[in-house]
Image 1 (cartoon, rainbow, N blue to C red):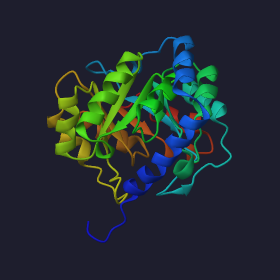
Image 2 (tube, one colour; image 1 turned 180 degrees about the vertical axis):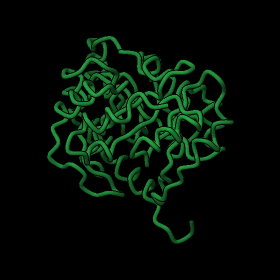
Image 3 (spheres, rainbow, N blue to C red; image 1 turned 90 degrees about the horizontal axis):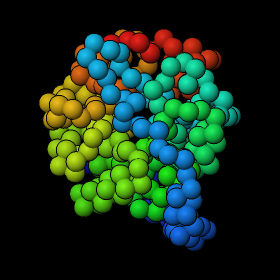
Amino acid sequence: MSGKPNILAKILAVKVGEVARAKDARPLAELQDACALADEPRGFTAALRRPAGEAVRVIAEIKRASPSAGAIRPDAVPEDIARQYQTGGAAAISVLTDESFFDGRLEFLSRVHKAVDIPLLRKDFIIDPYQVYEARAAGADGLLLIVAALEQEQLMKLLQLTRELGMDALVETHSADEARRAVAAGADVIGVNHRDLTTFTMDMTLTGRLRGEVPKGTVLVGESGIHGPDDVQAMAAAGADAILVGESLMRAESPQAALTTLVGIG
């Protein structure tokens, strides 16, 4: 990958500054108090488990933009999209909260939490315990931990804190080594991102190739590049319990109708 831009490194460098500013604006003690008053978590992992013979579960994502696609649905109202997703049969909803690269907001989480009653995932670049408390205070039931963005000790500590606060973690991988790291950290839900976060190139075969690295009983989630029924069937055949779909739903005239065509496949 010599000479190619490392997009993940760029995002993480920006995130360090964002977290520092967030800490200045809202003390950790205030966040911890808010966590104590938050509603009980809704069971993100349980919503994704796929009994034998049943369809792949769908995590529908609210994503207004991305570095790879640019603006996707910049005027999207998170609550409106979330209601469509719930009606369309989503098992859970992923909410992008990164503002600099994905046009998300932390406040979207709390707004969506009030609008629907299915589990919510905070989708962001989590590098600091402060962000875990932010997620719980805003109503998240789960959050994303990206193996490529974390040292092993960081990953384990963030996973432990996530559980202590009653949430679940989707631990994202992109290689066999990262999948083994996720397993070693004790992940219950392991995601396979078909998009390389350093270059944003795609490999739709990854979920199938990494299935063997994921122990039986661990929820496997296929992420990125899933656009239609054929892709869902391919993920089901690869052994995925769930899929995460964002861009294709957000670009559809009716996200609810687009989601309905995917739910029940597998």
